[in-house]
Length: 295
Length: 176
Image 1 (cartoon, rainbow over the protein chains, first blue to last red):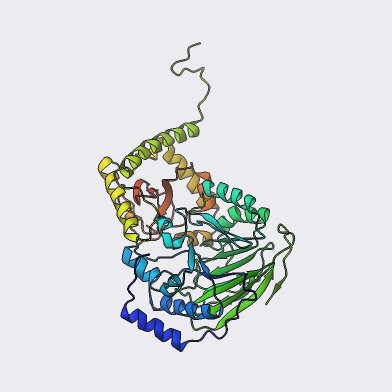
Image 2: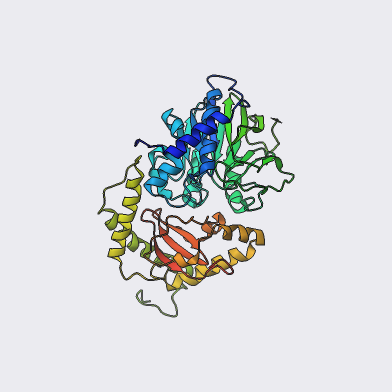
C-alpha cells in the first residue's frame, strides 16, 4: 500500500481522543481461536467524527483483537479523488491497516462501483462477493443494484456454502425504524426469501446513520450499523421490531463467533457500551421460529 | 405462401419482444464502442493506488465521447421501447406508498446532470435502483446499468462513468 502521511491536525486529534477516551467497557473475546471482527458502516466522511470513532476502534482492539472488518457501504462520501481515499479511509484507519486488519467493503449509494478494484477493500474486483473466516461464510452484496445477475449468483453461493454460519452484509437495511429511510421493503422482497431458504442467520446493514438491533425477523438477526461517522440524531422511532436503538452518537460493533454462539458489543465514539448480547445459531437453519437471544 | 415480406396472413409480432430485441442490438452496438474505447487504455487490475482507478475511468469516458460525438437522447432506448419502459415505470411508481416514494426520492441526484455523453458527477450519490423495478425492465449487460437522476432514467456506463442515454421525465413528481 502507498505510504500515507498523517496530517498533523489529524494525528493530534487521534492522539487526543485515544488518550482521553477509554475502552474499558470492551469485553475480551471468549476464545482465542474464535472469529473476531469489526463491523462499521457509513464511514467515509474524512471528518473529525470519523477520526474519533476510528481512534476508539484502535483503542478497543487492544482488548478485542479483531483481525478483519466488514464495511456496510458509503465508504467514501462525495468526491473520490486519490486524496479522498487517503482522507476518508487510509488516514483514519492507518493504525488498523498497519496492524494488518483486513477490510472487506460493500458498496453504498455514495460509492463509485469502481471501488471494487481498490485492493484494500478486498472485493476482488466484484460488486458482490463471498469469503470465509473459520466456520463463517460472509456474503457482501451490492444493495444499490440488485439485478438478476446478482440474485442468481447469491442463490448459487448460498446453496454452495457449507459453513455453520452464513452472514450477509450490505448497505440498505431490510428492516429499520429510521425516520429518514426506514425499511427497504423492495429489496426485502428480493432478498428475504433467499435468506430464509438457505439459512442466513445474521444480516448487517448501514444507510441509516445510527445503530439499531432488530428483534429477530423470521428467525434472522438484523443490525443497522450506519453510524461510523455520520449521525442522524433522534431518527429512530422505536417500534415493536426494535430491540435496541442508539441514535445519540456514532458507533461501531465488535463481533465474535465461537462455535454456535455469536456475541456482539456496540461502542459509541466515546467508548460507552450501548448494546451487547449473544445469539445462538439456530439448530434448524431454515426455521422461522425466533432463536434464543440473550442481552 | 410467400416467406418474404409482411402480409395480412402473417402471424402477429410480439411488439414488446421486437422492441427489446432491437434494444439489445443497440446495446451490442454500444458495447462494441465501449470495448474499442477500453482497448485504448491499459487493463485495470486491483490496485492500492486510487489514481489508477479514476484515471482509467476518465480515459475510457473520453475515448467513448470521441467515438460517438453525436450521440443524443433516445439513441439506445429507441422509439419503440421508450413508451414501454415509461409504462413499466409509471405502473411501478403508482403502486408504491408515499413513504416508499419519498425514500426513493431522498437520495436522488438532481436531473440537471442527465446529459448524454456527460460524466456522471463523481461526487453525487447513485440513487438506489428498486430491485422489483429492475426485474421488470429489459436486462442489461454488466457494463451498463439503469439509474434515476431527478425524474429521468439514464443508462450509465459503469466502467467509464458516463451517461450513454437518457429517457427524460419518466418519474412523476420526483425531484428535477
